[in-house]
Image (cartoon, rainbow, N blue to C red):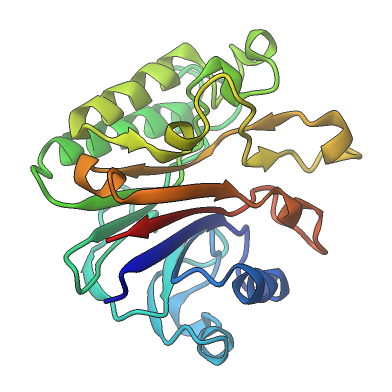
Length: 265
């Protein structure tokens, strides 16, 4: 096990369609581990050969046709841990692995929740809240296990995590009920938010920009939907955190960009 470790997380919005920019990112940033969300591919069609050719022979996947799907791509050996169904509907939204040093990496893709922040008229919003609540109960039972929780949480918790707190208060991903649910999840596991650990509020820190913007960089209407949380002993080993905004301008980009944390064990 190396003394240093870099872990990346990226909602890629179809790994096969965007394999070229994934490969470019791996060549340029060279993280030890890449956690992908929204892979949108069944397990048997996953592009294993492309990753192995890039020096990532260890691959764990939890795939699904058309939607969802998560994967962990690694230079280091992985022991698969579990695939939890926090939405209780069979969607592939979680994959947990272990490294040789005992570190757990939990890769999660929280549901977006639809457009209307009211579970009475929008079942998807209720499913999202229930998903986070099940995660919260799971998180409370982790005890002292060294864990890194990463992925697309689809919630921007702080006022400075969105381009306009006032205008997005009623927009799914930044509503008070979602923010409160995420706060309970964080408290249940004693999680350290590594993004805000290295870039304290109110510093600008976005990971997602809508495809609807003609010029995403000029309008900069971003949100911080992608997160990397660590148990306290793991957080103490973190040495750097970076958001790779430049990837949003690459050919056929995802609307999310990769985040990377480096550790010294």
